[in-house]
Amino acid sequence: MKIVVDSHTHTLASGHAYSTIIENAKAAQEKGLKLLCTTDHAPEMPGAPHYWFFNNQRILPRFLHDVGILRGVEANTLNVEGDLDLAPSTYQHLDWTITSFHEPVFPPSTEEVHTQALINVIKRGNVDVLGHLGNPNYAFDIRAVLECAKEHNVAIEVNNTSLTGKSRKGSDVRCSNIVEIGKEIGVYFSTGSDAHFCEEIAHLDLAIALLEKHEVPEEKVISTSTSRFLNFLLLRGKNRIEEFADLY
Image (cartoon, rainbow, N blue to C red):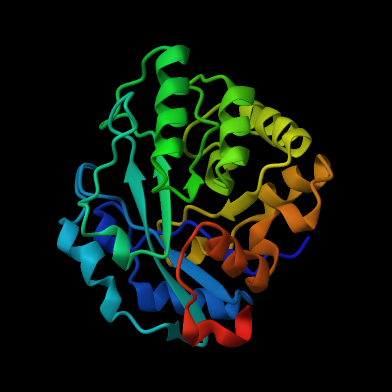
């Protein structure tokens, strides 16, 4: 399986990452990526930028080092109601919205609370993908959430950093369960390095291996082609990005 989109990356704007978007794009080009999602942490994460940072992504070039740049965010799920830490004015400036649980923002609770929060955030309609669901601190009803994600065309991220054990230790077993059940249900998957340093861009080997282990069809992995990824955004109701006309 060949991946041409890294759907989850951070720049130094996140507060605990170490590279610029230029450095990330250069690394993406060197590693053969065609699209790069820049997804810095949203404002409630300690050290994250002000919401103006995300609104102002409209100034970013659509290509850096010949790699298409998708303007994104890793938002925080704030509560069981499914609220996110994004200003209403921000969504129109974003191509790609991840939401994830982070301990400093959403303290781990019960399986019921986590499940309801994920279902509610999906139903709100503002999220394109659920990030690093393998975190063992956030047990949830996998089948219920993935069935809701399929119904609403929300992708499920396979996060390579979670699989390395460097962060969210113990995620590997749940990630495998998620992929197995997700394949059965027929959800869309994305693959993200969750890079916090440019040399981690496109580090997706463990994510690829897990998807291949469960024989997930490539047409269900949206990051396997620019056409799949960009047409998924159209499916989500996003506007066509004219600068990427040759990539659809």
